[in-house]
Length: 193
Image (tube, rainbow, N blue to C red; front, side):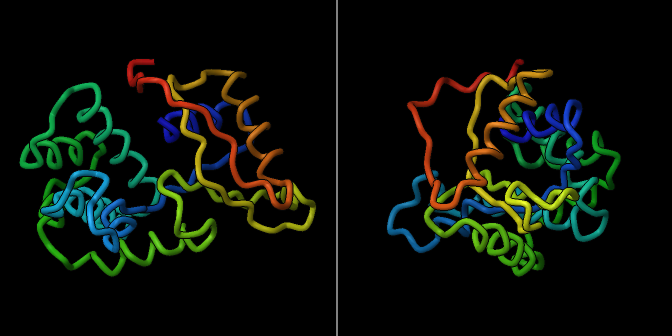
């Protein structure tokens, strides 16, 4: 849901989204029990395909694939990896052969490196999404430093100026030294908006 919000923000604020890979499998691998309910490691498959897309075609292609994948999963109900990856790749204008990366460990180092780059900015005890902001105007603190944070998790996706106002507020909070959490109980995800 945060990814949809960021795309909306980019329509009302001078924001350029650069997609990166983060892995719940990497995040949770040190735990005795996987909170995602994935003891067999199936969640490695989509991040491997994402890493292959990013490596071969760049972050913009990764964004297109991520959108196509999410649309088929959450709106289309297609949870069969055998059809989901090829159809999502095709919808994103990418070669279907990249689906084979899901069953290979060839991209695991790239997945780990991308994941660790994200968590290195915010700490290991958060999940996804991680947003890192490197604004051209010097940053929210005026010093040009990257501002990074976990979240926000938001559903339904704010549209138009509401998305922009949320962006402004999140950046304002994230720019305060020592600020680390703002939370309430989640609503049911709404992927239709």
